[in-house]
Length: 107
Image: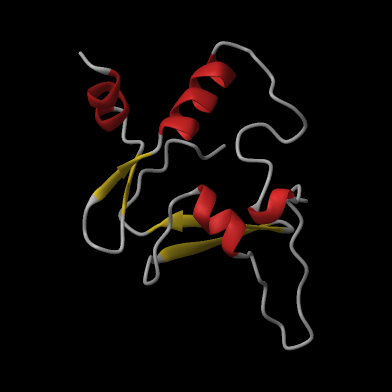
């Protein structure tokens, strides 16, 4: 199997604006290294946002009550405009689960 076929089969693919596909080799290799126990720095895979800024993994409730996650985080998850999430409330936590997604990561 070619490297491109492997990256595609593992789901590291995003859609370009022209409708074509882009293979996300970097994300694939970072995930592979993380699975092998290689730590690439604080925060793990995808810990650096646009412009080289490190992501804080902290969100703040704004004055109008909105909770802004930010483009860098949605880009890490390859989310597109219109993606829908189910909001699950727990004791002092909010969990967003993709509509139609699996619950295998729940504790």
